[in-house]
Amino acid sequence: RRLACCRQDSGVPKCVSPDQFLGRNGAGVTNQSTATVVNADDGKFRAILAERARKLAQSPKIERKGETTELVILRVGLGKYGIPLAAVDAIEHLRSLTPVPGLPAYWTGLVNLRGRLLPVLELANYLGVVGKQEDEDEDASAAGSELVVVTSGLLTICLQVDGVEGVQTVYTDEITPALGATSINSSEIISGSIPGLIALLDVGKLLSDPALTVQNGMQ
Image (cartoon, rainbow, N blue to C red; front, side, top):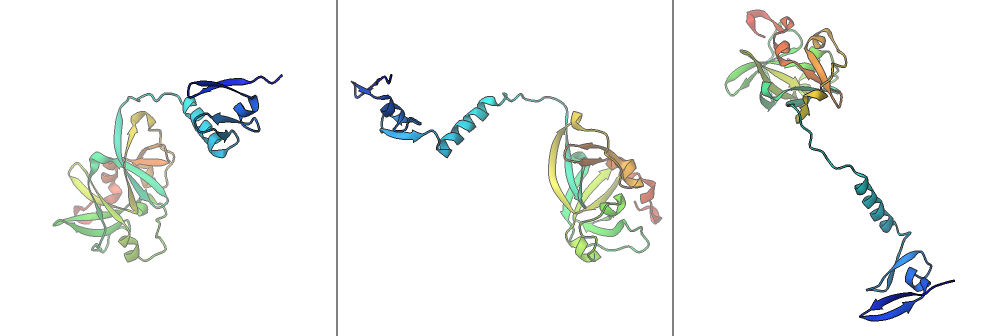
């Protein structure tokens, strides 16, 4: 039995059939103010319903509490490394440097930053990882590099890296043991890792590494 449904337009009761109420094919709903039919199979309509369901299913966000630390994320070859923001004095684009004969390969030379001569350590070479431009000549490789000026104690050097991703704040409980070393050098200075396969470098241990000591006391 098909029952009529009553509705009221402009204060005047009016009875309509179920087909009229549901729409011509019974698959939609009628907008009473415009007398148009919204098809329940319409893609936009289904998308709205899906979005509404997704929002209803989301758990309320809970503000997280805990100790955090700020890291500068460096891009070295195919990997990423984090160092404490507190250890970073400046970040500069490498424009030119002066090679110094007789230094180990990971020391690429000296740079003059605002009247101060600082040694440059190529981090990829020191860590034993593949640099992004390893197959290019030395001048081309240096042209696309960034210098991260770091200090530990009384010692300041420049770390030559492929790029700087930015500053990232992490919770200390997200720091996990180191994933693995790429060389003997990195096994001593990698202190842990954070989500995203980012290794953490201990700047203090890096700058105190005896392997970096060269003649005339330069480190």
